[in-house]
Image (tube, rainbow over all chains, first blue to last red; front, side, top):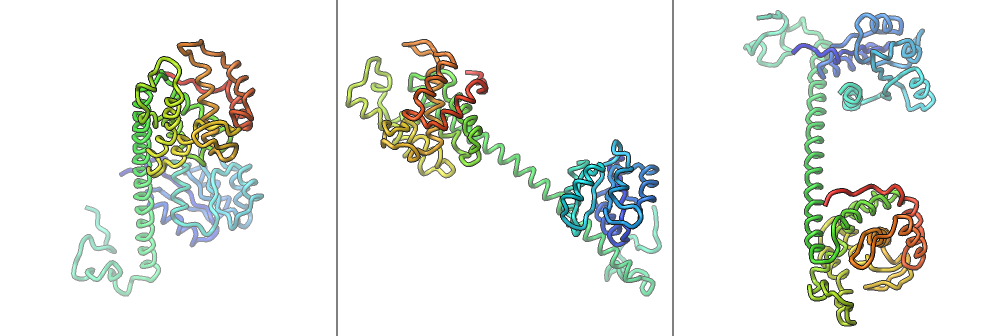
Length: 121
Length: 256
């Protein structure tokens, strides 16, 4: 079965373990997954690989997730932000930056799958 | 055929103990963990998908049941109505208008079975002889006494049916008046169940705006004025107010 162009995802987190876990669940859900450890790599990968979904950690050194989100082409991609805690102010800033959905760490695999289904079916 | 030297293509004596035995000492704990993680993730996705399929199936089944239930109730209500003088879409208009008022009052979800009560309000008329129901002239006192049993007969028909408790209350109290002057129990004000107070208003409005053998239909404005005029006596003032506000935008009931 060839991968649908809709089932491509980029996982952006400075923690390798988180990238690995998210990637594993996405691959089990038949996504083709790429990874980026920081904002600049994420923006480059997003421009080249054109994923349908970006799972984007908010808390990263140098360029944080909100800034990465702001610089993305939102016509082409849906963005799920990973936040460390429930924070309405942060969620508001993420939405302004174009985020489509949120997951609060720690999240369950079911929550992750439900968010993805909500965004691309 | 693709081959991967690190993974046996099928069972063999060397791998019978499980995938972790592949490569013996070359296998790192991280690789084993990685494979275990993949199995867990596959599990999670499979469980999620089957749950979603099941939820969709259940929702379809529930919709089918609700439709079948509504049609059954409708059929029963029409059967009773056929005995009586009412015509056309009176029952359906009562249902639609009643739901609109409950919605406007913000209490529709508190009374999920109210619509069945709106349809079945006169079901107790099966217990009233045709000679009385169809009598061309005015009823005698004795005949009125029989006629006035129909709310309680209807209530007794429905009281034991699960999920129809509100409907049964509406049937029982649909001829009560806000000031206590109605029947069968002479209840007043908050003693009358709220959905029954709603029904009284929509039933009266529909009766007034429908042609009858003995008079032409009133205009919608005239009928709404009558509802306002009888607020506090025949009708609950708050329900009347909500209804009169709603009246110009009531949904149209077609068919029949």
